Image (cartoon, rainbow, N blue to C red; front, side, top):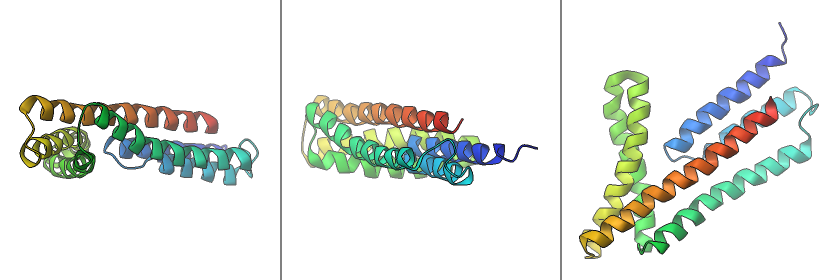
Length: 172
């Protein structure tokens, strides 16, 4: 058996787990990067240089910061308040836990799918509630702001998954 395959598989597994983390709103890019770092160390930097490893680490930092910046700009463009940004995170996390737990009745996949759906529904509901009932905005304004948080979450998720895919390609 070729033992160099094991670190590649381990790195890929960490990246896949990181992808799931990204979908439920956690910083999974660093988990994917950890897989790349393990592979680089196990191969004694034969295919991945220390500079590339350092650059990808800073890339993970940048993409995680861009997450907040992009979401904030999109929410602001659609007219939402700063409190809505916080509510989107809280609602997404809470919805992910609540619906993921309920989805656990269907096993692992029910829980995973429930977490994803819960993150989107929770973000939307929390922002809508905040804008509508806390800030006394109209239904249309509240729905527009809530939609912006969901759209921002989708865009950021896409960019993070592309980044993780690129990290996997470095290993293979």
